[in-house]
Length: 347
Image (cartoon, rainbow, N blue to C red; front, side):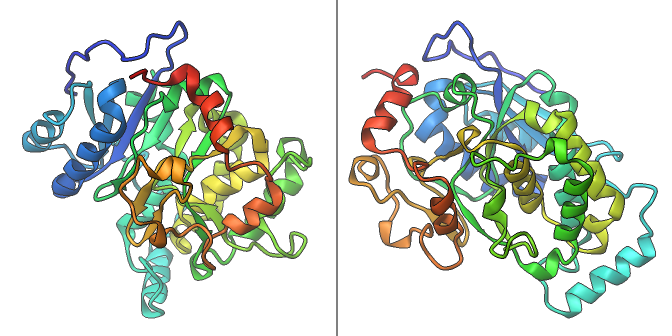
């Protein structure tokens, strides 16, 4: 592990949130990670100095550590993922898993033949929040290589999340490739039937966002988890772990190609209230090929993205479905000012 002393936080707060950026990367991702960190520092973290936690199934090189830590004045921590978090559980038939990968590859399913992609999705679904380097933290912001952050953020996102009791934040939503998750919905429905006490079926929930036909089928809607800001306590909770264990026992991460994005999203929609989930409209973001670019002039004046490239209201996006359920999820200028004022850097 490598650490550096951070300069004092730009905004003093008596209940300072314990938060970090979490980056799953390989040594070969160095160039792309440097680009992402540079933009994060310029747009947000240069003002707030939150630490970075880097995780890898292999040992990070000295070059990786040096070239990433030199971009920030914040602490940087580097950890290796143990085999019990990145590997096959004992109940998986690895011969069958290989046959399933070949079948999906032959059908040209995206990442269908990738073994490492499946380990990554399972790790992000059920283990990243249990890595020892994250034990001290309450909130995380997931960062990936070669992403873009287009807008200046002048308020403490993490502190707002904690104080407002927000548990999950997102920017992009879309439908999943259904060939990757053929049995995920039936498996989820069986979990709901066995654990009704954990499911939020009230009007302030998000469960109906997942289906267009009264829960017969899953419409594939999910938050794109390459960007997410969330509560680690939610993912560490008994209810979430019970859901993950239910999924993991079926082998779907290996026999199919279940992604962490639908897994996280199913849990959020099943268990949280609308008031605990936040759309970060003011954070312009791109993960190739999709981009969220704020279209409101009062936000866009702080951004460098092209509004015509905004993905939000396209046919593949799930934002239209979300808007029918959560009526006031896009903050207007007045609401945004009031909600962020206590956490804002003053000029």
